[in-house]
Length: 254
Ligand SMILES: NC(=O)c1ccc[n+]([C@@H]2O[C@H](COP(=O)([O-])OP(=O)(O)OC[C@H]3O[C@@H](n4cnc5c(N)ncnc54)[C@H](O)[C@@H]3O)[C@@H](O)[C@H]2O)c1
Image 1: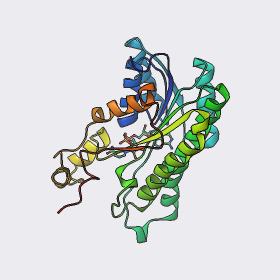
Image 2: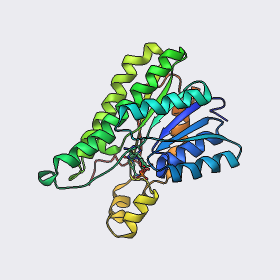
Image 3: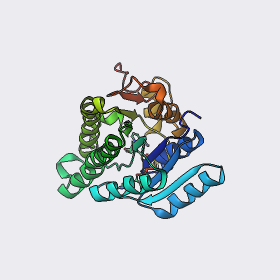
């Protein structure tokens, strides 16, 4: 119960990594707001958490709209009285040759993967400053914000921006008792990624070969770090970009 009595928001909690973090945070004792675009999926996960004895609230959210993010923070505080942990996880990926990448697609990725993270940090920080006790923010970025992957200009630029935002806001808000850290995952086998693997559209063998630990990650591989960064056990960590990638970014040989 490392998050007993904490209040957390997880964006993009209807699927994949966000769903995993929301369920794990509730298991660790946190009251969790699950926020995303699909209320149907969110409501089912919130019920699953409550059936297991946890506390959960499902709310609609579009991270591209600052007022939508503000509303999720406000309703969370109305329900649970405070906000301790903000997990900015919602994101989209896209792959296009850069010379053909349409401005609308470029903008959509930046709005979601970069601006959405900023709006989440900003709304959470306002509440954490107002309540006087601070809190912590965990941004889910990507190894592709640290190293380049061809045909993913908008994704890589957004994730690199989110990594820098993490460092900048950590420095700016340290005096307000707000910690800001990021988890930069490598390839993680979510339902979406598994679907792409099943269709033969992701060269999983080549990825495994290039990864020192010889496999792609599972959602469960991220949970230990997500709990650590949300808990008081990481009290002196801020501005860190923690890669969870089986050694992918460390590797620079043949
Ligand atoms: N799966 C991987 O291999 C991997 C690797 C590195 C980084 N990541 C990052 O982890 C995060 C989660 O990825 P995932 O693989 O679980 O993805 P996913 O597609 O399974 O889930 C994404 C979630 O974000 C939500 N979302 C998307 N746009 C939104 C918006 N505008 N407003 C609110 N919610 C929105 C979706 O509804 C969904 O709940 C993303 O930021 C992604 O870039 C994933």
